[in-house]
Image (cartoon, rainbow, N blue to C red; front, top):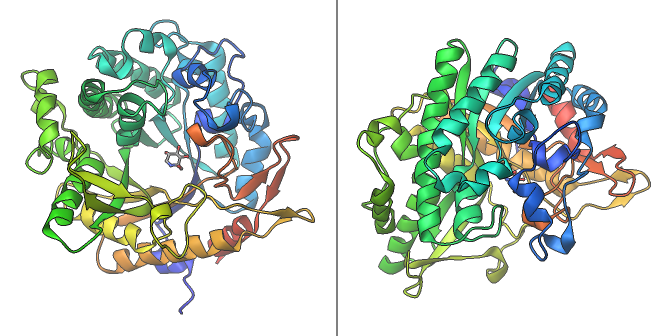
Amino acid sequence: MKVIKRADFGESFSWGVSTAAYQVEGAHDVDGKGLSIWDEFVARKGKIYQGHHANIACDFYNRFPDDLELIRKLNIPNHRFSLSWSRIIPEGTGRVSRKGIDFYNRLIDQSLALNIEPWVTLYHWDLPYSLHLEGGWTNREIIGWFSNYVSVCAHHFGDRVKHWMILNEPMVFTGAGYFLGVHAPGKKGIRNFLAAVHHATLAQAEGGRVMRQLLPYAKIGTTFSCSHVEPYRQTIKDYKAATQVDALLNRTFIEPLLGMGYPTADLKILKRIEQFVKQDDEAKMMFNMDFIGIQNYTRELVKYNPFNPFIAARIVKASERNVPLKTTMNWEVYPESIYHMLKKFAAYPEVKKLIITENGAAFPDTFMDGKVEDNLRVYFMQDHIAQVLRAKKEGVNVHGYFIWTLLDNFEWAEGYLPTFGLIHVNRQTLERTIKSSGYWYRDFLSH
Ligand code: NOJ
């Protein structure tokens, strides 16, 4: 097999690493930070693996200068991180916290001083709890609350941050947080879900408009979770089931953004979203993003299932199948998925540019003699990067690849069990150790 080199991607390709505020910062209640839905959710019994929480997480809030040094040491030129809304505006609306702004100013300034380009996600799931009390994403008012927050961020950081992402994986925070109830704020049901989907779609476009108006030269994007979906068996029923799951997972958020409306022809349940749609919403859901962030981890196989009242389909988990390799998340390792996703999203003529804003894997690493030799993660990265190159060579307009993630961190409902980092974090001492995968990425980026 030919060894892939950074140079194969060209000079202007953006290589990076992604993180998210709640998963690494800790410092959940210091310097006037307001409560977020995740701070409240982790305190509920039985919600998180072994009662883990992120009150301290990786203590990135205090240790960021050292962590930025590590990014520099690994030769990683771009760092995607998110801003915590409740650190900046503790109650969600109204008063802006000077200390919150100061923290992100220091983070941004220090990054730039080290030649690390900041890529900022505005919303990576940690909604201020006060807004949840008003209904959170189920309340249409959130479009205004969010736009105000976006304008505060543009105002304070827009002189130095050139790349912005409006939302992180809206399908996951609406699906897990408002339909299944397994993520914060733990709401359930189709009504909550559809309301959240529609308001997130509108907030995403409105956030884009606010940014573009305030920062006409900034590059504005948003990020979507996606998985290559295939029928489990070669039957018409499984094929139809797969089409519905594909519409749900891969098309629900991008198509209204591009002016195509929700994919109701392939997913009937989305018709019920009409109860939340107002006049002119079709146009308000649209925004011309400079780039679309693709976040891919695995593929999904789908079986027909007549017992699900909302969608006649069931995802057959990797644990029920005979897959050669799966991760701690129980996700099949299937590198071609990222290639298929790039082709799929590039096929929309309105999509200008794609960036892989997340891709990575959790494996059970072993820390031995002061080292973590995580060869599985190295192979994972090599194989996925090769698939990105394959798509690029076929003409897909892909311009970047960001690995998930820098540090072993708080993986939401799974707590600290899955470790995705290029850097191991000792849970007792919080000491950092660069894994083999970190060194591999460093060497890849140096040639
Ligand atoms: C997507 C999310 O954006 C991120 O927060 C999460 O940790 C990774 N996927 C891995 O599950």
